[in-house]
Amino acid sequence: MKEIDSEIVNLLYLYYEHDDKEIRDAIIKKIIEKIPFGRNPYYFIELIEDSVVRLQLRSEIGHELNYLKLIEDFKTYMADPHNLMKGSYLVSRFSDAIYISFEDYQKRFFLLVDEFIKTYPDFLDLQVEEQFNKIVDFLYCYKEFQGNFEDYHTPENSFITFVLESKKGIPVSLSVITLLFYEILKKTLESRFNYIVPFSIQGVNLPGHFILFFSSKDFYSYFDPFHYGNKITYVDCVKHLLRLGYQESPEVFLNPPVPKIISRMLYNLHNIYTKRNETKKQMTIESLLKILNNLVQVEDQKHQI
Image (cartoon, rainbow, N blue to C red; front, side, top):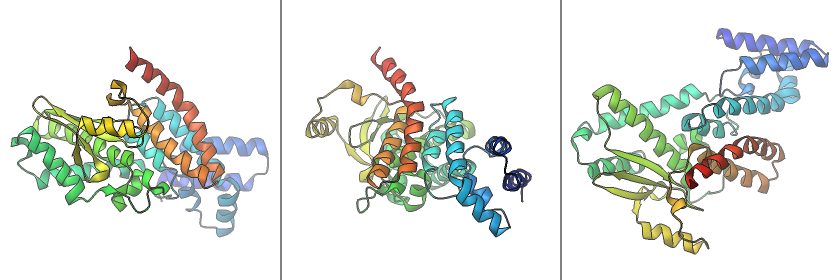
């Protein structure tokens, strides 16, 4: 057992042994401080060997610890709110998985980029449009990321940790995977090969269907990760808006700030948990959205200036 794991397990035993509320509250606070960013407190409860203690702590303080840790980690994320890696990972913390870690999450994207570079060793020599085609081929054909048409409203579609395994998600989660892939690819090519990528990939926050925009000096295209990375036109986007009762608006096509993307992911989950009457998760998301929405409003105002 790692040293930090042992410390937290010992604190959990200490909590179990005390009845005084003030002491217990102090211990809980210490536990939250000790748990690394992004770790699920249930992970440490499951490390307890005594089954009686483990079961009691699981039922007595498991949910409270998890809620407090989510709030604490979200505040940590808010110190760097444009970090899509951290923000998207925290959305995945609403899953029931207890063994995921932020370090493993990051590693998955670096491994994905390494595989891409090995698969296309001539990538740096290609024209920009062909580079776009290779990215689309790799993510949506070779790696088979695609929309979950059969079970669109399952919460797992919003958890990037889950989508990385299942290869199926909703538009915004598949788009986030692509944005993170691009982010790591850009940094990796610059650090390894001193190569500055001549293109960008940005989000497009269309109502009802998040998509992406690939742009460079010589080539640009909207594309849809939910539909195998298919190219779509500006006219297609406008038609989508009109079908949903919206008017064509330049603001819709602006690159959304990361907090707005995270907010959209959380609202998706909130709607699902509301319909399922999962009140605890619903209320936790409402707490996080209160923290996030003020920043989203500020970012929207910046876009309007």
